[in-house]
Amino acid sequence: DIVMTQSPDSLAVSLGERATINCKSSQSVLYSSNNKNYLTWYQQKPGQPPKLLIYWASTRESGVPDRFSGSGSGTDFTLTISNLQAEDVAVYYCQQCYSAPFTFGQGTKLEIK
Amino acid sequence: EVQLVESGGGLVQPGGSLRLSCAASGFTFSNYWMHWVRHAPGKGLIWVSRINSDGSSTTYADSVKGRFTISRDNAKNMLYLQMNSLRAEDTAVYYCARRNVVAAGIVSGFDPWGRGTLVTVSS
Image (cartoon, rainbow over all chains, first blue to last red; front, top):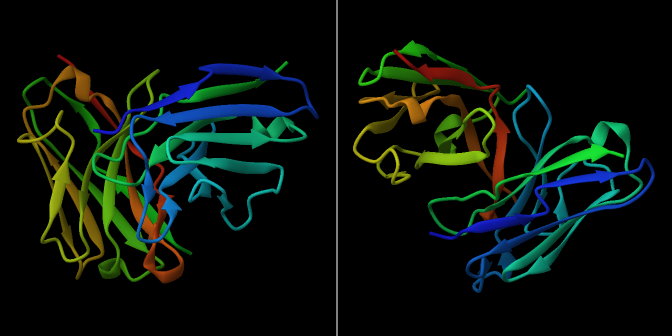
């Protein structure tokens, strides 16, 4: 199984500042046949289901604000939230869609400082 | 509107059974692989199971293999999860989610998700 490890577990950032969340996979999630990293980021707010934010490590889902960006390849990935807004308070998860079981990171709780 | 609605959760004793349902609407259900994911209180998201578009292939997490069965009825646009021999550690909100594909049929992730149904295993 591919193990996904996020850091930090929690993060407090001031409004308007930048938040950075890291995700590391125990093996590469780069699919060689199409050169896509099968790494997806989700946002989950209390009482709501997860929402897909970014797929293929860096492609923003339609409707997601451009202050959310993803980067990385192979085994190391980063989600960056610029100009933090109050509505960005949530738990963020990375997930590998490379192979079953489709494991998630443990989550990173983002709060306002 | 693309929508998934789960039902069937509730309180069950250890060793008991429960069948979850997920009603799909707003898209051609028979074209998509589907998944179940659970979220235990205070814990992270755990992938549970998947089924391919025609129901001929299924995969399970080790923690539920042999106890849970995923199935679907494409004529009714329904996804199911039969859960047997339930344990306290199966207590969670269970979500159904669609495997989403984008350009050239490449998987992007799970989208959308239903709002979930709570399963509580306790005596």
